[in-house]
Length: 516
Image 1 (cartoon, rainbow, N blue to C red):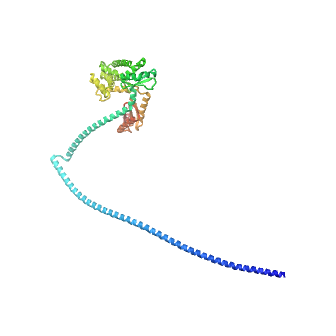
Image 2: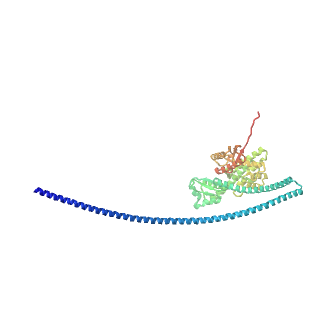
Image 3: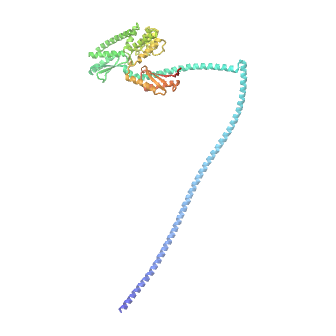
């Protein structure tokens, strides 16, 4: 019984489970159908939405494409309008150009017709002129009785004479202009030389230094409130420079005699020790008298030494004044004595008037004794003074022409000029150290050798002339002139020197053969 109940209960349970599974399957199938229907519906809705969105996108794309096409069409229309406008302007320009070309062509045609007409007219006139000239020639030949060749010779002779006259007038005009230009350039060159040498020469020739026993002497020279130095400068006519130079004062002045008087007086006052205005005046007067006596004695000694004979006292005094005059550091009195001796010796060798040469040599620079008081070149001043003292015309000419202005007209004048150059150019005669002198000579030869075609160069006359020997196959006559000018310009730009330097170019051609 129990097992039968158990089997019944189990069957009931199994049936319940079967019913449950059946019901569950039915419900699951229904839910699946519902889910499938819902998914299908959602898919359909999504498809519809996608279709609607695609339509919207398509519509929007169509709108944008239409707008783009409209914009492109507007741009194309604007560009077309611009091109049409430009084409219209180009057509108008071309039309205008065509009109101009046509007008010019018509003008050229009219000008050609005019030129042809004038050419025909000129041809006819030329023919008439030729016929007229032939008739005139025949008439001239008949009247003059000359053949064409003879008439040509007469005409050429007249023209040649006329050209010669015009050439002569032109030469005179050019000479005058050249002389004026030469005077102007000479003045310019002189001012350049003065500018180059003035400062050094002024320092060397206008200053004297007086040594002092001590620096306390400077205060005594100046005096209370400067009264001593003022009195000294007023009496002597010089400037006294009292500076930081130890145990020395400087006397400055252009007049060498005043400067010598001042130097001698100041040395006397320093040695004496008594310095006051009264003592200064007394000492200056004594020194002036002593310097005058010294100049007189120097003049007499120079006259005796050069054996020039009797000399006017004023000229002798001027010769003595040259004792205190220097030129580039060379004492002018000693220089004048040298020139007198040299000119006399050369005159004796040549057999000309020795007395005139010596006298002209001694007096040739007396103008430098008064060139602080009289304006003009010292040679002209000296000649005027000699004439005023009744010197012979020959001696006056020697004095006046010793610098070749004017040109010497006598042998004695040439000898004085040569002697003056020899004395001034002697090595050591003028203030120039040996080292500077050698450097200047080396510089001259170096500059000359730097030019092409130069074979040898020699600096002579104490550096006042450089002679250059050139190769004749490389330097012709015209090139020699240019070479001399180029050397002179280079010397002017690279060297410092007193006076002038002469550049001489020597070109020589030799042909050598031997007779056997």
